[in-house]
Length: 286
Image (cartoon, rainbow, N blue to C red; front, side, top):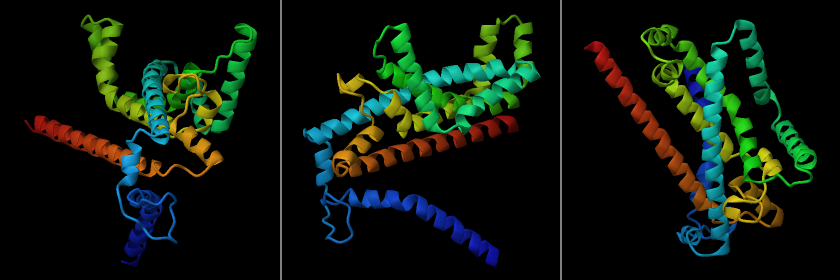
């Protein structure tokens, strides 16, 4: 009994530490005070939400950063999913010794410090721009995209690999025996069976890209919605704001919008998976 109570207290304490900062930001998003403070009066109002959707420079800069963040996250996730999935499938059918070597190489970026990845990419881009393209400045959206793809591919691989191990390899062989080409077997047999892992890798890639700062800071250049200026994502915009002054108060209501959006997506995915599981159980029962 005592162990159960202590376990529950421990779990709720961890949940409190995880969600208390988010709840504080949500609460102060309805405050008209510019600074989060417990010393002054809490002036309730929706002015920050009005400011976030107004025509001011701060609101414009925030939405530019949001747009850049979403573009980079979605495009890098799509590229990482394609490369990571094909790499996982190819590795799955390798010989045992070659498979172990590839898996070790795949896990190095995960165990490695992110600053090492960022610095190595920067050195590579500078070297290519200096010696191959004769002094060209390569840093742009494309270098930023490559950085985020490199960061996400190992996680896509780890998401797809368990689904490949759970897959029945005889189905693919049967499809080939029945006249399907290898590409048709890939599209109609393997991909449908590993799709949950592919989708999980896609969501994980987006999550990694959304909150990344180090790789973004080292590999970004001009482009996207920022025009001729350096690409600002939410992480770099907040860091830049901290260097100049305090973080804009309009970011507080933005956190609530992001939180509710992610919560809705998670609930939607959970409901969909539960409904699919119930349908599968009914089919098995029949």
